Every structure is written in structure tokens, then in C-alpha cells.
Length: 185
Picture 1 (cartoon, rainbow, N blue to C red):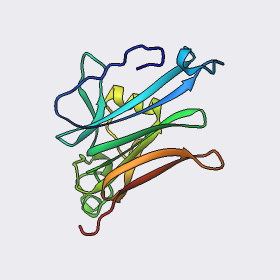
Picture 2 (picture 1 turned 180 degrees about the vertical axis):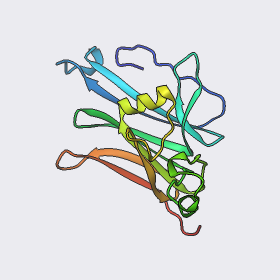
Picture 3 (picture 1 turned 120 degrees about the horizontal axis):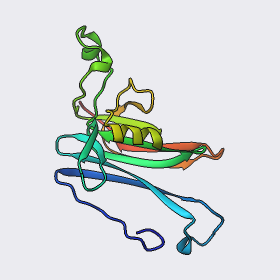
Picture 4 (picture 1 turned 30 degrees about the horizontal axis):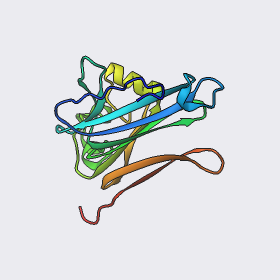
């Protein structure tokens, strides 16, 4: 619910397996009274995975369709300010490793033309400005390492990733990610 009492709507979509939500408040004016001021706004982003191992964002009602942006399961997403830009980091399991031996040796398909498919234990990330995320969602642009708007890649093998954002002692944006590692493949 908005601080002024305005209702917030949460919709249920069939076939949703997991949901991650991140919100951030920002102040427009001088008021220091959060509970009775219109000077605050909230921005949020939602990441969803379904049983077909697609990662995406739910379009606004009345469509309530999953805009598929990546492959994988169990997304975790976090919003933060990097300087004056609002940025989002999303991590998930069962991602797709674009840079692997099989794909690198095949001559018939270029790396950027690969069709991603979910791979067990692959942990992937997507990082970019909120504006870049909005463009991807609105235009249903899939995540790819060949994209120049959102950084995309694989960072480890494992399961159950979780992230948080913080600012270090110099005020620089930092991320902490933890996950269950792999002892055997």
C-alpha cells in the first residue's frame, strides 16, 4: 500500500513458479514526514519465472502475460541508485551459458544467434539501468551477451542465489550474492 493509503494491486498469473520484487522510494520535495507527504514515490520491478523455465516481467493489466526475457528459474532482483541512475541487478538459476566449448566449436551458428535453453546449475545475471530494463520489457528483447544495453552473463555454478545491494565506505554501489555451491557435477 502506498504511504498515503492508495491501494496496490497484486495479480495472480497461472503457471508462475517464483516471483521476486524490488522497490525503492525516492523523495521529490523537502518533506520529512514520510507518512503524510506526496513528496515520495515508489518505483518497483518484478521478475517472474514459470514452469517452462522462462524469466520475465508481467505486463500491465489487463494483459497479465509473461514477457519472456531470459531462460531459467528462481529470479532474484534488486534496485539501487548508481550515481543518479536507477539500476537493477537480476540473478537466477538454470540459466544459459553462451560461452561454452560446444557452442564455440560449431560453425553453423554464431554466438549471438544461439537459442538459449535452460541448463542445470548455471547461475546467470542481468544488470542495467531501469530505462534499459523498461525497453527490454516493452519491446520483448531477450537478454543476451550481445546486447549493449544490459550486461548479461554467467557468474558461477550452483543453486538458490540471493542478492542484496549496499554502498561501501566510499559510497560506491556494491552487490553481495550468495548461493549454494556445487560439490559434484
